[in-house]
Amino acid sequence: MTLSRRDFVATSSSLAAGLAISPSVAFPRASTTGGAAAPPVVIASANGIRGVKVAYDQIVRGEDTLDAIIAGVNIQELDPEDQSVGLGGLPNADGVVQLDASCMHGPTRRAGSVACLEDIATPSLVAKAIMDYTDHIMLVGSDARKFALAMGFKTQNLLTEKSRQDWLRWKSKLNANDAWLDHDDPVRIKFTTGTINMNAVNAAGDLSSVTTTSGMSWKVPGRVGDSPIIGAGQYCDNTIGAAGSTGRGEANIKVCGAFLAVEQMRLGKTPEQALLHVVERVIAMTEKRLLSDRGRPLFDLDFYAVRKDGTFAGVSCYEGSQFAVCDAAGPRLVTSAYLYRRSERPTR
Ligand code: ASP
Image (cartoon, rainbow, N blue to C red; front, side):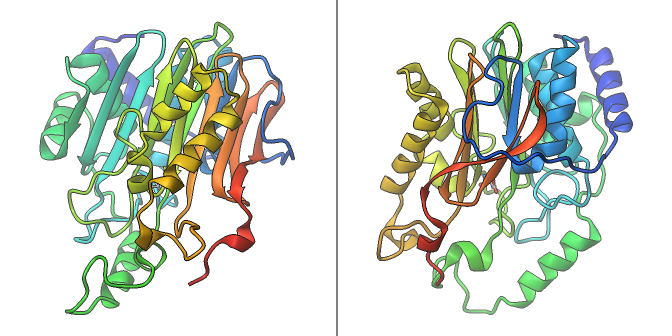
């Protein structure tokens, strides 16, 4: 659906104002693929458990799949308690919250993306505005902010007191000799990650995908992760399926994970087989400093995929991950498939 600029501004602000933050509902299932196999289906990273229900209900009412999943991820973006996305997201090394997001609309084969966006809580909607109202796909930094302001987005301070305190704690542990790579475990000591990816297919088989994040905490200012990279953080081909990722973006970018997942499904693989292939490729492309002596990754990375026929999966490097699903059986968390047992995760 394309709106005039004025309608767009009115719709996005009333949408943001009307979002209810309801308690999470989870119905754990043992299976990793297939619930009710027929569309519509919405899947997301586990933090999207509230959003998948919102998106599913909108899709069942006949609303566009991309509008629906963006409404789903807006819940996390606007939740100050979620420190991985939008308002309340953990800041960069300078204490500034910089957000990344991207989206793809299957039926119209369009994409939008924004990176290093400051002061605007809903980068997913900015990415969609770039898709809808420009001839471009990606805008970054202060010019992306300027574009968003022209489109009617409102600025606010995204750094909550809780995230500021966490940043201060991190900063207080630095010393004059610190470098970015000179310690044993650059992933777990210095950084935390978090993101929401959501993908949907409706009864007509139309697909969309979106990913939004505040990125890796304490990142070097200007760092762009995988979330706004079309083909890495998310990808959607209306003839095949949609996929996305959360976790260490630097590991995903090198394999274009979401694109690779869709291409593997194009070859006839199930979503789970496709994602396992992607995670194997990630490990094969990981530099030595981020692998244990046994070749196990020192980071977490999760992928999610849904096929046009409504089958879906989540796959993680290590046992123990879950992802959110909503279909005719309702919203629930499903256990992800994995490459390695949790006991194999390096502890150093
Ligand atoms: N993938 C995100 C990034 O690297 C972070 C995350 O998902 O936790 O920016």
